Image (cartoon, rainbow, N blue to C red; front, top):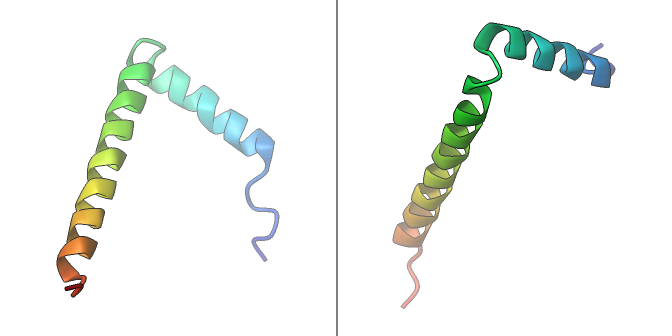
Length: 56
């Protein structure tokens, strides 16, 4: 049912809409903050995994 739900032109439309809504000056800042958040999330997940690992 959803095999062809996301096509490349769909992503292009989403990018154009984001550009119109947020403007070209705010998009790099948003991408940078998203990258920082992902990095923090990964490091916290690694820390939790290491905490639960019962290695001697």
